[in-house]
Image (cartoon, rainbow, N blue to C red; front, side, top):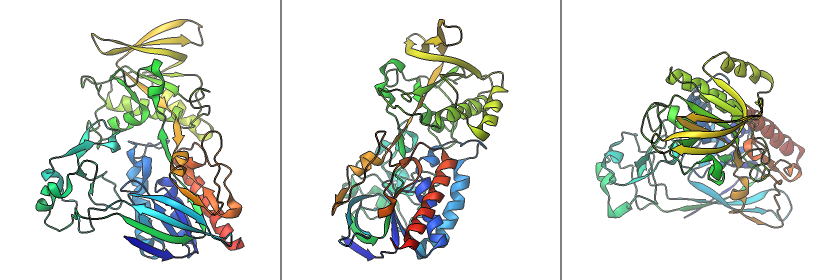
Length: 434
């Protein structure tokens, strides 16, 4: 099915995470421009929604996102159009060199706006799927509510696991005619004046760090997994427990720079890992009062106002800091405890440290390289990324911009600033009539 829209006084935003949504809101509230947001997941909000809390105030993510959804609802009919479960397939530069033609492919949307999120469909569903929102630490039904802050707020169906019309049990359970298992994919084509890449990030694949044991030992997890363990809506209901046996995790080792600042993996600093581990050590102490986390680090990077957050963590005598490099993680098979071989950089000695659980501070990998590989660029359009995979030097003279982690590693606060800066650049570009 093909739908087409012509509105050259508009902007395409690839990515519906925090920076993409923020940029759309800033642009549409300040001008009469229209924003098209294309998001591959069935909801907008991005990885921020997967956090338990974000620093420095340790706020739950749905607080700030609720403000944005209110702003969205006040502007959506007029200025913002969302394409969830969608990917950009083509961007073609116009013959006159100004503006672009865009082609978007949208997966079948099996759930319509009649959905009341009553949950009867999920209760009836016999199929399960790995729960990607919880980093596959548990499962959900094939028909599921992605998260409590989902926008649009309705259930969705994973077509890779649902048997569709050969099952039909969810349709029978729904009283509101909200499920359309025969839905088809759609192709949308429209004209835009500029393009913003806000494609976000993913955690570095720490299985490549064979010495640190992820994928081999159940009690070695990543920082993003730790975030979901601590969340009340996570796989354990907010209990920070060991994956191997469900015991409360108390002696937890946080290993910094897991892949980052390493020429064989990620040569850059991901900017957020130190603060993330400090934050997680704090809420580990809150959830498990008898816990004693230890942070192993090369150096702690907490610039500017974040220095106070570091001091907050250091004021807790049960949070320990070791300036040392972890060379290897092994497991005691009798207890599933983990043994860390550490080179203590202060004493110069090699020590062994036993932990209940290990949390690897995995770095941030920008999605833009992978996303660009799926987009056909036409009429001589070239979009170049740097050696680390970021679109830092975007082509603003031709209406190509970047925001958030598409541009560089950023935390939530700085991603918002980046989005505002990007929005201003788009508005200036439009006013200049380039």
